[in-house]
Image 1 (cartoon, helix red, strand yellow):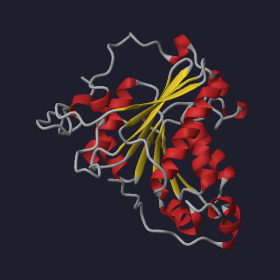
Image 2 (cartoon, helix red, strand yellow; image 1 turned 135 degrees about the horizontal axis):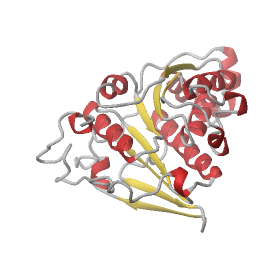
Image 3 (cartoon, one colour; image 1 turned 135 degrees about the vertical axis):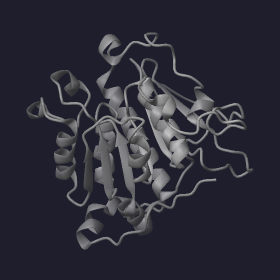
Image 4 (cartoon, one colour; image 1 turned 90 degrees about the vertical axis):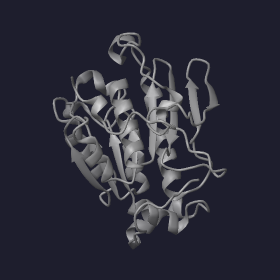
Length: 278
Protein backbone atom coordinates (compact mmCIF):
# COMPACT_ATOMS: atom_id res chain seq x y z
CA UNK A 1 0.00 0.00 0.00
CA UNK A 2 1.20 3.49 -0.82
CA UNK A 3 1.52 6.07 1.91
CA UNK A 4 2.06 9.58 0.58
CA UNK A 5 2.45 11.34 3.93
CA UNK A 6 5.72 13.28 3.93
CA UNK A 7 6.17 15.79 6.69
CA UNK A 8 3.62 18.46 7.53
CA UNK A 9 1.84 20.37 4.77
CA UNK A 10 3.32 23.86 4.63
CA UNK A 11 1.28 27.00 3.83
CA UNK A 12 2.17 28.83 0.62
CA UNK A 13 2.98 32.51 0.35
CA UNK A 14 1.29 34.63 -2.33
CA UNK A 15 4.52 34.56 -4.35
CA UNK A 16 4.63 30.76 -4.14
CA UNK A 17 1.00 30.52 -5.22
CA UNK A 18 1.93 32.43 -8.38
CA UNK A 19 5.16 30.47 -8.90
CA UNK A 20 3.40 27.11 -8.68
CA UNK A 21 0.17 28.18 -10.39
CA UNK A 22 0.47 25.57 -13.15
CA UNK A 23 0.73 22.85 -10.52
CA UNK A 24 -2.06 24.22 -8.38
CA UNK A 25 -4.56 24.16 -11.25
CA UNK A 26 -3.81 20.47 -11.81
CA UNK A 27 -6.60 18.44 -10.22
CA UNK A 28 -4.08 15.77 -9.18
CA UNK A 29 -1.88 18.29 -7.33
CA UNK A 30 -3.83 21.38 -6.32
CA UNK A 31 -3.04 23.51 -3.31
CA UNK A 32 -2.87 20.57 -0.87
CA UNK A 33 -0.45 18.69 -3.11
CA UNK A 34 1.77 21.74 -3.52
CA UNK A 35 1.82 22.14 0.26
CA UNK A 36 2.95 18.51 0.54
CA UNK A 37 5.80 19.24 -1.84
CA UNK A 38 6.83 22.23 0.25
CA UNK A 39 6.83 20.08 3.40
CA UNK A 40 8.86 17.25 1.87
CA UNK A 41 12.54 16.46 2.37
CA UNK A 42 14.25 14.63 -0.49
CA UNK A 43 17.82 13.30 -0.46
CA UNK A 44 19.48 13.04 -3.86
CA UNK A 45 22.48 10.73 -4.08
CA UNK A 46 24.77 12.02 -6.80
CA UNK A 47 24.88 15.45 -8.45
CA UNK A 48 25.80 14.05 -11.86
CA UNK A 49 23.96 13.09 -15.03
CA UNK A 50 20.81 11.84 -13.30
CA UNK A 51 20.91 14.08 -10.26
CA UNK A 52 21.25 17.27 -12.32
CA UNK A 53 17.87 17.29 -14.11
CA UNK A 54 16.26 15.58 -11.12
CA UNK A 55 17.24 18.34 -8.71
CA UNK A 56 16.45 21.15 -11.14
CA UNK A 57 12.90 19.89 -11.52
CA UNK A 58 12.45 19.13 -7.82
CA UNK A 59 13.54 22.68 -7.03
CA UNK A 60 11.27 24.12 -9.71
CA UNK A 61 8.40 22.02 -8.35
CA UNK A 62 8.84 23.50 -4.89
CA UNK A 63 10.15 20.55 -2.86
CA UNK A 64 10.91 22.21 0.46
CA UNK A 65 14.29 20.69 1.27
CA UNK A 66 16.68 18.98 -1.13
CA UNK A 67 19.73 17.25 0.27
CA UNK A 68 22.56 16.50 -2.14
CA UNK A 69 25.35 14.08 -1.29
CA UNK A 70 28.40 13.90 -3.59
CA UNK A 71 32.12 14.08 -2.93
CA UNK A 72 33.19 14.83 -6.52
CA UNK A 73 34.27 18.02 -8.26
CA UNK A 74 33.06 19.33 -11.61
CA UNK A 75 35.22 18.38 -14.60
CA UNK A 76 35.01 19.46 -18.23
CA UNK A 77 33.89 16.01 -19.36
CA UNK A 78 30.88 16.22 -17.01
CA UNK A 79 29.31 19.12 -18.85
CA UNK A 80 28.05 17.04 -21.80
CA UNK A 81 25.25 15.70 -19.57
CA UNK A 82 25.45 17.18 -16.06
CA UNK A 83 23.35 20.26 -16.79
CA UNK A 84 23.30 21.46 -13.19
CA UNK A 85 26.89 22.67 -13.66
CA UNK A 86 28.49 25.11 -16.10
CA UNK A 87 31.93 25.89 -17.45
CA UNK A 88 32.72 28.38 -14.64
CA UNK A 89 32.07 25.57 -12.12
CA UNK A 90 34.96 23.37 -13.30
CA UNK A 91 37.03 22.41 -10.24
CA UNK A 92 34.30 23.27 -7.74
CA UNK A 93 32.62 20.77 -5.49
CA UNK A 94 29.48 19.51 -7.19
CA UNK A 95 27.52 20.13 -4.01
CA UNK A 96 28.56 23.81 -4.05
CA UNK A 97 27.70 24.17 -7.71
CA UNK A 98 24.37 22.43 -7.12
CA UNK A 99 23.52 24.69 -4.20
CA UNK A 100 24.10 27.81 -6.29
CA UNK A 101 22.19 26.48 -9.30
CA UNK A 102 19.15 25.39 -7.30
CA UNK A 103 19.11 28.72 -5.48
CA UNK A 104 18.86 30.47 -8.83
CA UNK A 105 15.95 28.23 -9.84
CA UNK A 106 13.95 28.66 -6.64
CA UNK A 107 15.00 30.70 -3.59
CA UNK A 108 12.17 29.13 -1.55
CA UNK A 109 13.92 25.74 -1.55
CA UNK A 110 16.42 24.83 1.17
CA UNK A 111 19.45 23.00 -0.24
CA UNK A 112 21.38 20.87 2.25
CA UNK A 113 24.90 20.10 1.06
CA UNK A 114 26.68 16.87 2.01
CA UNK A 115 30.09 17.02 0.29
CA UNK A 116 31.23 13.50 1.12
CA UNK A 117 30.87 9.96 -0.13
CA UNK A 118 27.92 7.97 1.16
CA UNK A 119 29.24 4.85 2.87
CA UNK A 120 28.36 2.21 5.43
CA UNK A 121 29.29 4.50 8.34
CA UNK A 122 27.07 7.47 7.44
CA UNK A 123 24.28 6.13 5.22
CA UNK A 124 21.74 5.24 7.90
CA UNK A 125 21.96 8.60 9.70
CA UNK A 126 21.81 10.62 6.50
CA UNK A 127 18.99 8.65 4.91
CA UNK A 128 17.07 8.74 8.18
CA UNK A 129 16.91 12.54 8.00
CA UNK A 130 14.86 12.58 4.79
CA UNK A 131 11.39 11.50 3.69
CA UNK A 132 12.28 9.97 0.34
CA UNK A 133 15.57 9.06 -1.32
CA UNK A 134 16.42 9.46 -5.01
CA UNK A 135 19.49 7.54 -6.11
CA UNK A 136 21.36 8.76 -9.17
CA UNK A 137 24.71 7.21 -8.25
CA UNK A 138 26.95 5.82 -10.95
CA UNK A 139 28.27 2.61 -9.40
CA UNK A 140 26.79 -0.74 -8.46
CA UNK A 141 28.40 -0.57 -5.02
CA UNK A 142 26.65 2.72 -4.24
CA UNK A 143 23.34 1.51 -5.66
CA UNK A 144 23.25 -1.58 -3.44
CA UNK A 145 24.36 0.43 -0.41
CA UNK A 146 21.57 2.97 -0.86
CA UNK A 147 18.94 0.31 -1.52
CA UNK A 148 19.93 -1.76 1.50
CA UNK A 149 20.04 1.33 3.73
CA UNK A 150 16.57 2.42 2.59
CA UNK A 151 15.16 -1.05 3.24
CA UNK A 152 16.67 -1.10 6.74
CA UNK A 153 15.59 2.49 7.50
CA UNK A 154 12.07 2.04 6.12
CA UNK A 155 12.44 4.80 3.55
CA UNK A 156 10.99 4.92 0.02
CA UNK A 157 13.56 4.93 -2.79
CA UNK A 158 13.39 6.08 -6.41
CA UNK A 159 16.40 4.67 -8.23
CA UNK A 160 17.54 4.90 -11.84
CA UNK A 161 20.50 3.81 -13.92
CA UNK A 162 22.07 4.74 -17.24
CA UNK A 163 23.67 2.65 -19.96
CA UNK A 164 25.11 3.85 -23.26
CA UNK A 165 21.73 4.24 -24.98
CA UNK A 166 19.44 2.75 -22.34
CA UNK A 167 18.14 3.51 -18.89
CA UNK A 168 15.91 2.04 -16.22
CA UNK A 169 13.94 3.35 -13.25
CA UNK A 170 11.91 1.84 -10.42
CA UNK A 171 10.50 2.80 -7.03
CA UNK A 172 11.04 0.68 -3.95
CA UNK A 173 8.92 0.77 -0.81
CA UNK A 174 10.27 -2.38 0.81
CA UNK A 175 8.96 -1.34 4.25
CA UNK A 176 5.32 -1.52 3.11
CA UNK A 177 2.92 -4.10 1.76
CA UNK A 178 0.73 -4.29 -1.30
CA UNK A 179 -3.04 -3.96 -1.09
CA UNK A 180 -3.33 -7.76 -0.98
CA UNK A 181 -1.03 -7.95 2.04
CA UNK A 182 2.03 -9.27 0.22
CA UNK A 183 5.34 -7.50 0.98
CA UNK A 184 6.64 -5.02 -1.55
CA UNK A 185 9.81 -6.14 -3.32
CA UNK A 186 13.30 -4.87 -2.60
CA UNK A 187 16.13 -3.97 -4.97
CA UNK A 188 17.62 -7.38 -4.25
CA UNK A 189 14.38 -9.04 -5.35
CA UNK A 190 15.03 -7.50 -8.75
CA UNK A 191 18.82 -7.85 -8.83
CA UNK A 192 19.97 -10.27 -6.10
CA UNK A 193 23.68 -9.55 -6.56
CA UNK A 194 25.73 -6.92 -8.42
CA UNK A 195 27.50 -8.07 -11.58
CA UNK A 196 31.13 -9.18 -11.22
CA UNK A 197 33.61 -6.30 -11.18
CA UNK A 198 34.73 -5.29 -14.65
CA UNK A 199 31.89 -6.92 -16.57
CA UNK A 200 29.95 -3.68 -17.13
CA UNK A 201 31.98 -0.82 -18.65
CA UNK A 202 31.85 2.54 -16.91
CA UNK A 203 30.47 5.71 -18.44
CA UNK A 204 34.03 6.90 -19.08
CA UNK A 205 34.83 3.66 -20.92
CA UNK A 206 31.65 3.17 -22.95
CA UNK A 207 30.20 6.66 -23.16
CA UNK A 208 26.62 7.79 -22.63
CA UNK A 209 24.13 9.84 -24.64
CA UNK A 210 23.91 13.11 -22.74
CA UNK A 211 20.24 13.80 -23.39
CA UNK A 212 19.35 10.31 -22.11
CA UNK A 213 20.55 11.39 -18.66
CA UNK A 214 18.15 14.32 -18.93
CA UNK A 215 15.27 12.00 -19.80
CA UNK A 216 15.93 9.55 -16.98
CA UNK A 217 16.54 12.29 -14.42
CA UNK A 218 13.27 13.93 -15.43
CA UNK A 219 11.46 10.60 -15.03
CA UNK A 220 12.95 10.37 -11.55
CA UNK A 221 11.61 13.82 -10.73
CA UNK A 222 8.13 12.86 -11.94
CA UNK A 223 8.22 9.72 -9.83
CA UNK A 224 9.41 11.55 -6.70
CA UNK A 225 6.71 14.19 -7.14
CA UNK A 226 4.03 11.52 -7.63
CA UNK A 227 5.19 9.69 -4.53
CA UNK A 228 5.05 12.85 -2.43
CA UNK A 229 1.70 14.12 -3.68
CA UNK A 230 0.15 10.67 -4.02
CA UNK A 231 -1.32 10.54 -7.51
CA UNK A 232 -1.01 8.12 -10.40
CA UNK A 233 0.31 4.58 -10.49
CA UNK A 234 3.81 4.43 -9.04
CA UNK A 235 6.64 2.19 -10.15
CA UNK A 236 6.63 -0.07 -7.09
CA UNK A 237 7.12 -3.59 -8.42
CA UNK A 238 7.65 -2.25 -11.93
CA UNK A 239 10.89 -1.52 -13.80
CA UNK A 240 10.55 1.01 -16.60
CA UNK A 241 13.21 0.37 -19.25
CA UNK A 242 14.04 2.97 -21.91
CA UNK A 243 15.85 2.11 -25.16
CA UNK A 244 16.95 5.35 -26.83
CA UNK A 245 18.21 3.59 -29.96
CA UNK A 246 14.80 2.21 -30.90
CA UNK A 247 12.92 4.79 -28.79
CA UNK A 248 11.00 2.10 -26.94
CA UNK A 249 9.63 2.16 -23.42
CA UNK A 250 8.87 -1.17 -21.75
CA UNK A 251 7.66 -2.00 -18.26
CA UNK A 252 8.71 -5.21 -16.52
CA UNK A 253 7.01 -6.40 -13.34
CA UNK A 254 8.77 -7.98 -10.39
CA UNK A 255 7.64 -9.21 -6.99
CA UNK A 256 8.90 -9.89 -3.50
CA UNK A 257 11.31 -12.79 -3.34
CA UNK A 258 11.01 -14.67 -0.02
CA UNK A 259 14.67 -15.69 -0.44
CA UNK A 260 15.94 -12.11 -0.66
CA UNK A 261 18.56 -11.48 2.03
CA UNK A 262 17.21 -8.26 3.52
CA UNK A 263 13.41 -8.56 3.86
CA UNK A 264 13.00 -12.24 3.05
CA UNK A 265 11.83 -15.06 5.26
CA UNK A 266 15.35 -15.64 6.58
CA UNK A 267 17.19 -12.33 6.27
CA UNK A 268 20.98 -12.31 6.47
CA UNK A 269 21.50 -8.56 5.99
CA UNK A 270 20.61 -6.79 9.21
CA UNK A 271 22.98 -3.82 8.98
CA UNK A 272 25.37 -2.28 6.46
CA UNK A 273 28.46 -4.16 7.57
CA UNK A 274 28.61 -6.05 4.25
CA UNK A 275 29.25 -2.68 2.58
CA UNK A 276 32.13 -1.73 4.89
CA UNK A 277 35.49 -1.43 3.15
CA UNK A 278 37.52 -4.51 3.77
